[in-house]
Length: 266
Image 1: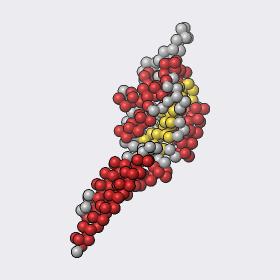
Image 2: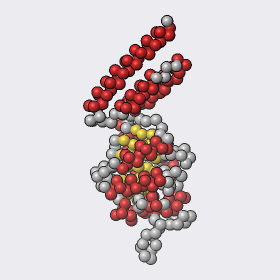
Image 3: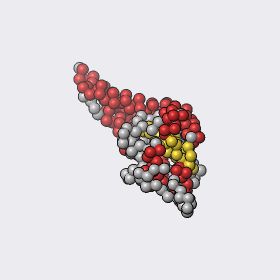
Image 4: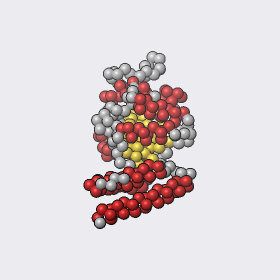
């Protein structure tokens, strides 16, 4: 009898979920015209849940659904994602960056972690995405917070050097330099708010860095209050910053501009 009830329950659940699946399909025909809606994967999720029929897996699969629901509600109500692993970080960031066009804005803070601005394919694509956005007419500003001791090496880096005023006609990237030591002394709370860095797109969405040694991680936010705080942090950091090009060595005899070699001193 118990087995019969279980079979009947499964049959009823399948019928119910089939109705839901069909309903989702009808809704998708309307919703997809206005927004992204991955109905196929939602249907596959229902199908996978339904076809795990072993009672021993009931709590396991319910926990999986519960976890997914919690993460989706965090996006829906808090407008914040959970922390993204490195691959997810770039999978989100690069398409957003490459879609930026004329009249849009990018405001970023870089804290010069080891994983930033290296020669990896992802970072090279990131640099090119910044250049392309600026050349398309977007306003791209970036504040580099760093210890003065690493400034010569940083300026010798192709990506950092691309933000110097002397290359503006080529790249359209505007770079600023903030002395980490002075900030720590004068504005420790501001430095704390800068965290590991961030990038804001059009005052609408931001990616907040959360690096671990040389590992790139971060989370996405569309939370209006959080983005407002990030923009205030950016503007306050600009008060303590100067144009990155001003840190280049300028020989008095010729007036030309040269980038210091790694290991050189100011």
